[in-house]
Length: 428
Image (cartoon, rainbow, N blue to C red; front, side, top):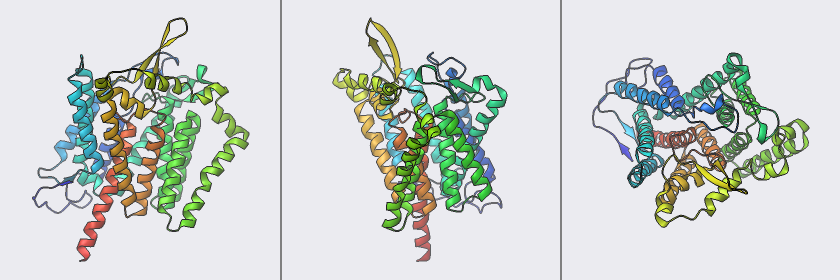
């Protein structure tokens, strides 16, 4: 659905974004970088030993997100044009549904605060339609730049606080994992930053949107972050996203079938090359590997929990991402769910799971219908990453980096299709 005003806008000033504001293009790129920074899981567990609990610095993130929103609103001209793609509409429905159910909880203020932050993020994306989304390549460039800046903070953390930058695996295996200190990021998030950086740079190199030297540097930096963070989920998810991007951009069936050999060769390499095999195992035993570092224990607890029909429909409340486990002698442990779909069910119920699942399907439809190969490949990479990582990480129930990847993929592909439609109309 499109929402547009009838106001005729003045011609753009040279060096600015056409039709929306007299602000230069770099202004909107930096604004997007700050927005991406505002959805990072700034974790206080970065400086704490593994196994201790910590909380996310929600106040700082909320203030940053609010400041970015106010600046974007002030820089946007009255009568601006925007477009809301189907996936974004469905996420608006999800936020409204979660807001309605939050009032049924004993303490609704926590979930309502998180939902207000989520809604601000969605509206901000609508405000940026003209300066960023309308030209999909510009939003891809902004997303790549944002992850480059995040990667730079991780690298600088090694010089700033090397003892904190290396996190011991301890109970989860042997060795150390790289984490962010300047911007507190746990190793899984460092791996995600590296994966998105590597994937977008590789597609930019293949599609000739990036020069060879910068692309190689970005690919190398992304690979180092994945390897140093020892994040298997990010490695598998970006590999799957790249394979899907290759398949849907090949023009012949022979080329598409040949792309399927890529994951097979990667699997053989990890099983046969000693250093890769050691990296994959992380010093864990068979039980830890088969239980996905203990994740399946919390998943089974969620599935086995007996709840009322109302709780099954509306969930336990946004923010409840952990389950209580009672062990042998009455010991009680708290474990993260670490699965976006089970987390959605636990937090906001079955109806929310259905809404977000339809949003993901709608985003995939937009990707498959994008006419430009480069945009289609970038959308497939981001959505492929989200689809794979959502099975092993949480995030789709909140304004997280994973949700932003989904919304970006849907926005750029929908914008690309709309641009093609305008070009066809102009030729006729």
